[in-house]
Amino acid sequence: MVLNSFVLVLKESKGAILAVEIPSKSVRGDCFIGEEVPSVGLEIVKDLTEDNIFRAKKGHHSDGRLYASGNGKLYSMWDQQPQHYDRLD
Image (cartoon, rainbow, N blue to C red; front, side, top):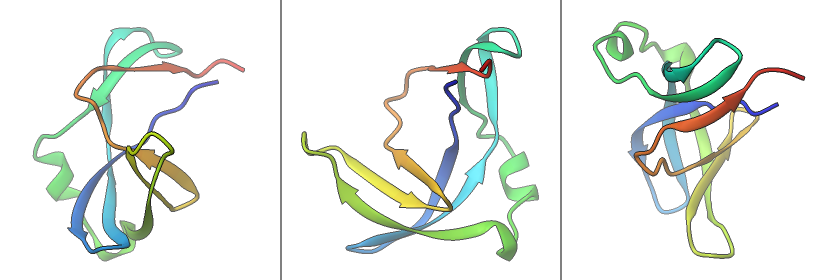
């Protein structure tokens, strides 16, 4: 199973970020297996409330890439490429 979550960083400090999860849209495949990208339309602003903003701690992978952990998930920087998903067990 491979699940993706995308966030929009609202504010960044040296050791943390404030972020909000944003929806994704499938660009290839079906509802079970395929590729998706973040959906960055006006729906982001519509759903932006104090309740869905969270803090995540920043860190670096051993190869130097930035990541953030918070909201029970690990987030990496998006490489502008569609991300594989597989919702089947």
